[in-house]
Image 1: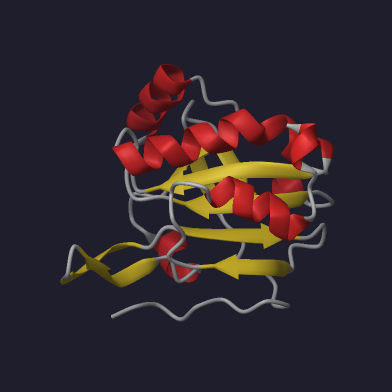
Image 2: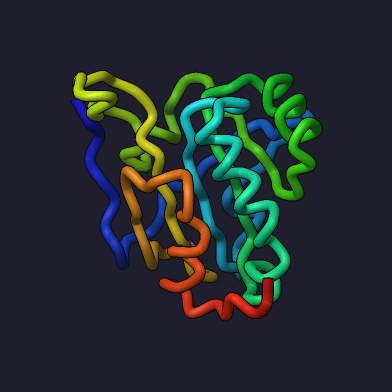
Length: 161
């Protein structure tokens, strides 16, 4: 069973999670900023590494366009710190071990994996405006090429990278 999907124009569910350093991070901490919240299945796996490094490599253009990036997975803070250090990631990674935030965002449920229906994390990205309203709710995104597609959607010039 898949949680209800969020709709464009609605307020994003608030959350407070633990980051890779053990600190509490709340969505409210970013009030007044545009935020990209992305959910990924597992730190250190090939697709998630590709996606995280893509955000890392594009962080300057995203920040210069006014966006903060938050990555959320079900990994423990210790696993997130290892992943962040190994990949030189330059944005917060948040731990949602009980999947409460995944479920609130509709980022956990049934998916097709190599022809089999399984239950798991749905690779999803949400773009929030300065008031926390959802501008884009993108479900089942591809790890490769996702950030380029997102930048195009947001009108961020590739030359800024």
